[in-house]
Image (cartoon, rainbow, N blue to C red):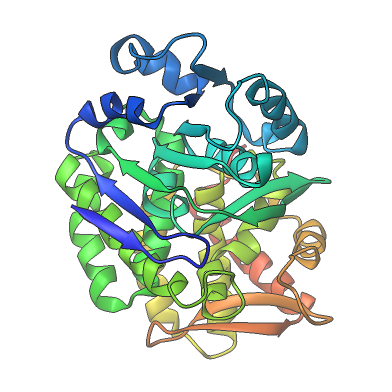
Length: 362
């Protein structure tokens, strides 16, 4: 099973793998270099990466603080020691942060080298692996700089998810939920049916959810690869979500921040009479709350700090704030006229809601 993605840069393909045998076939891309997330190496190095050597692999620690130009420069220094130049293939194995760092490197080193990506987290497998974007944080703000550069091949192996920490797994689940909601009520209900088995990390349910998520995302990026139109709607949940990542100093991981961002966006939609309170409650109680495992602190919901972070949104085009919302028919709408007072009202309502549930982390 595979998905072919058309790109203005180069077409690429996503392969779904039932065994890890595909890892033994990368020698055909010689000269090559593996760049492996340190956590993945510690979990699987002895078992899955026996064919690598100290000369053909780079192991790097990964966390959000390392998604910077400094990390890119360190990787440049290591890769330029190889005799191979533009004919080098870089095989990166890890999650979305590693994807961003190595993708940026692949797109800029020697003006572009061949790049293969093996995502090992649900967030990367179900969402970020396609779409061509690479992103780095800068100046305390999320994804402020980056490039468009897809891998030439992507290999999805769901068994990696069995060892993923719950906080990271549920971060990916947040994006899965977002994408299914964006495709309408039918896909939303389909996800609801399999959500318990996804939470148990059952392979068949994971494969179905990942495949559906990528097909849904493909429908948004196929005609808008460079994010100038319809693809903007994929920022549903991200406008508030990215701000919450910043205000929490990334204590709230990306996908969990997106879930909270969906809740906040839906509150605004209710207040604008685009979404009924009944549908808002249905989505929140059945999909959003069951997808949250990270309890935020109340101080992370500081209105002034969140609004200030939203003003730094690189997609903001007017004097007011940008927001993607859904309506009662599950259609997404992007507005550029969200008033700070509306955002503050939604934040205040969410605080009251979480207070009633005693949900905040003390």
